[in-house]
Amino acid sequence: MRPETRTMLLKLHRWVGLAFAALLLVQGLSGGLLVFREEIEGVIHPALAVTPAETRVPVQAMVDTVREAAPQATLQRIKFAEDPARAAMFVMRLEDGAPWMVAVDPYNGRAVRAGSYAAWPGEWLFRLHDALLAGKTGEIIVSIEGIALVFLVGFGIVIWWPGRRRLKSGFRILTGQGADRTVRTAHRAVGAAIGIVLVMSGTTGALLIHRAALQPYLPVVPRPKFEVALSETPLRPVDTLLADAQSRYGPLPLREVRFSGAAGQVVALYFQDESSRRPNATRQYFYNAYEGVELGRYEPAALPPTNTAYDWLFTIHTGKAGGLFGRLVVLAGGLSLVFFAGSGVWLWFSARRQRRARRAKAENRLARNAA
Image (cartoon, rainbow, N blue to C red):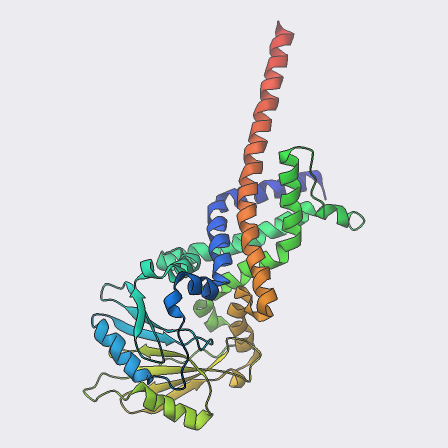
């Protein structure tokens, strides 16, 4: 590589890194913690651990309990954990748009914890990682940061490349030659080792944020959306809809229930798709809750390959695609961002300090010569 090209890439790498250092630090820390979110929440909130029993409380009974406890909130979804010893999560929205979450023991129907983001640090952390707690603006910033991360890795690998014959030396961290040398060689070696993971994180993160915007330009089948006019007719119990779906499609494990419409008149039932190799794959069936009739479905097995590829993005981004090992790899990537943010700033200040020292030395030499 020509020296001037390398110098230009180094400047780009340095200034892009400095511009996004704070964001990389936030994303690295939050993303690393979210990899083991369920385990961490289990420690923070012991009440989420419940005692399994032979029977569960009907879903509609839990819905009624939660709605009575928070009549000013709109129920949006219910999430059922794969672990039978974990409470179900009811996600709601208050009149002012603020979130409200309630954990319910599915075996006795009692609420075990409730509150806003302040009561659920894991949810707050997810919103921070996803959109910096700033809505659409935050999502745009995070997606730009993801793209910048891909460029940082690309520039860094080109700058780092020692050649095939000296490849092993590129992963060597030098010690005993001063802190700056150790930090610089560690910055390069760790970056080369973890670079592919960071490219994966930045790319999948940006694609996930802009998934809806990109769908019209891709050969994918969009997830269906249905609207049902408000009516004075009483809503059918969720369990009635659930029984209908399971009679048609088999006793699949229920993972989520989503409600849409002003009265929650459109109900989507998410069942674990045990035929899929993707850990979080679900079959989704949409119902008119007034009439109890199915409106449509979204089944991964019936979708084109492009849908399958896009649906894998979240699984890859979180590391779940590789089981425990995959999650540990993503955790390592998140922690490396923390290291890069800190070491990059360190190296920048070090370079400035060295330039000032050289400038002062040159000025002193000129002064001595003039004397």
